[in-house]
Length: 264
Image 1 (cartoon, one colour):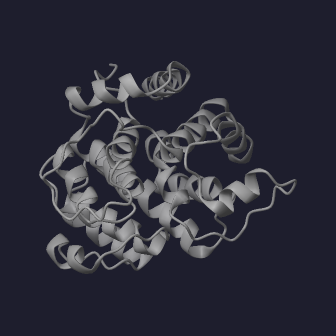
Image 2 (tube, one colour; image 1 turned 30 degrees about the vertical axis):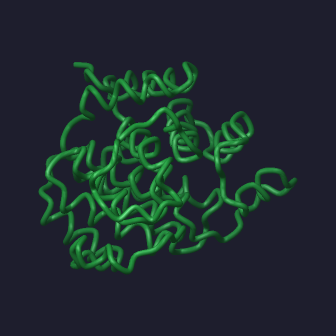
């Protein structure tokens, strides 16, 4: 049975909602989810690149470069841009949070812990072959896998903490006062996971993530990708805003990916 709101929207919604708060040091949960200037960024573009690579059983490298070249002004990091426009196809040992923000399709598409971890690493090492870059992608993909399969939050916390040595014990109120903008996996993924673990529903999860005052689009993209899997869907009013802001060719990838999931 198809979903009223297709999967992958959690990451894209988080990206769009966080896009206008990225450099504002937002420290409250009281803010408009969408404004006229809310937009998709590299988080959405590369999320859909990974999804399309899975659909076509092609290399993550090929699709990441192709999508980034098709949407060159989406806010990529400096190291990624240098890699994108270089002649080299070699990764650049990154431990930035880009590997974690683009991995959500992996958590949806594969049916075992081992395969999810394997494919998350494969999607990361295209650029992020540093151990922390790989770990960040694997942790997010596995949290999505556990969430969509009905695993409770306490077990998700234990599993991710044990496997990846992330400290998920602080509360948001403990993290928020001193947390600052940080683009590394090790200072983004645990915080995004905490935002999810403390949430009451999908919207609450995104408000938690943005309220940390960090790399808001990526924090919310990661948190949203896990929250969607855990809570089952993205609320219709949020999904409608996402569809309005996503080009038709990118929305088509979302729909094709969900048709693929139905067939699994």
